[in-house]
Length: 86
Image (cartoon, rainbow, N blue to C red):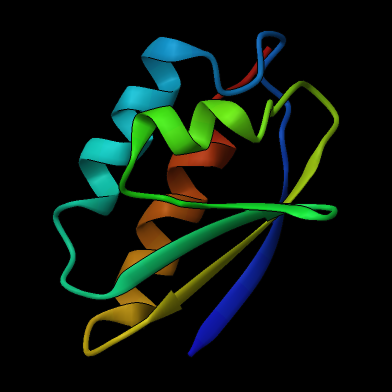
């Protein structure tokens, strides 16, 4: 398992469009993807569950990937979150 912390800089957080893009990217990998914010966590491959985490600008997300392509998944998802600029 690998994990990383990422600060959300997008003014609208992970609302529907960027959240959907995140989920689509996560589904390309065979590993499991878990997104956590404080006490809340969700399956990173489910838009509905990700929306319940309520990710807003300034939040620190922990992404955990577990499986054969975990490193590639974490790198890709982290790069995607970093690309969501103001």
